[in-house]
Length: 495
Image (cartoon, rainbow, N blue to C red):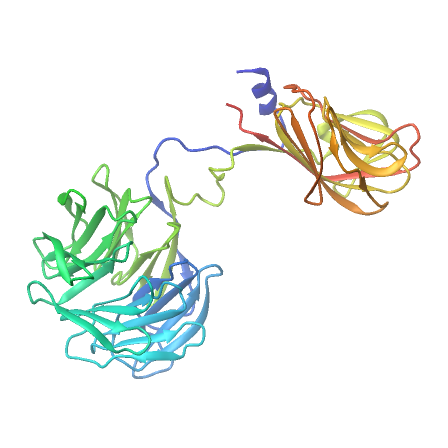
């Protein structure tokens, strides 16, 4: 271990930010309950930008007929935004348009209805049939709505006009479907077959067979993998490039209701009529987790577009869980993997040694009066970012020294500057009694000074890997004091 590493280990108030290298198992956090549902949730959808959640079901409070409704939720604040009453039959499925401004519902009576999310105003509805809607999807441009029931249908999303209809390859009803990421295909379950259907021809490009009725389907974000759940609780995965089966296994004791890839497609998460959520590790082909998520059934399960949240229903409730793992979210009390820096708090006199003059600590501020200087107790590597707030209370010349260069007062004038070899920039005039945010960044042999977020000066000081910092409240001509506070040092991770 080198000298710098040993010194850094001894610094007080130090927070290390580490990067994970080995793959970690996917973990689901404790559920957060969205308050506001008044009846059973039957279907859910998340807007493409991940900002909104739509839920639908028997959900109108005080309605003896158990009327249906769609609710809109804000996934930033986890608050309920709007209730939209629905006069149709049971809600089987719903979807957002690509802009997240419209939501469409497919119902048991065969109708498809679309609303404006912001106002709750109904925009269009299609006529019902004796075949219930099992899947509803917007086209990638938002101009069409694709519906799966006894056939494949395409409707005009603006007025509900029927644009096209095509029979399934085996004349069975569409039980579930999703749109490919490139917007060119439907991945649909029809009886015990899964079909990759071209939207241009409305014909299967290829198909896979399963042993039981398909009840849920999903595609990976890179469109290379497909997965399906069956009525008997079995889950399948396929390689869509090589067109071959990758996995078949029993994940639930009752029908699979919903399924989704997670953690950069390394895992497959499914919900079932048995009330459980199952997590399958695709690489090991092992069931890593089984959660008792509902006392009745998990009717709907969705993963947010950023891969951070798993959202599912528990009869009347909606549960939101964070997803933790490689390529997924990190617990809020864990370091962020992309911020590989050491953060050091220097905002106390305990981190310094008094060299001369009068120093005191008041209300989180270190104050130097007259001819005064303090020196850091530790030394630091060459590269760093230093930040503090500085207030000069009267005629004094404060400085911050970084070993081979310094920042501070310029002569007897009220000007700040960054000193060092080949210094360039404009001297910064300041006022007594005003607080300024100071930032100095050193990388290699280049130092940059920013004041209140704006670059002021640069210099090219010598490289040193044993820097000692110092604060000067003023020199021999000082007649007042300087205050330093919110002092923080960031050091890039040392290899």
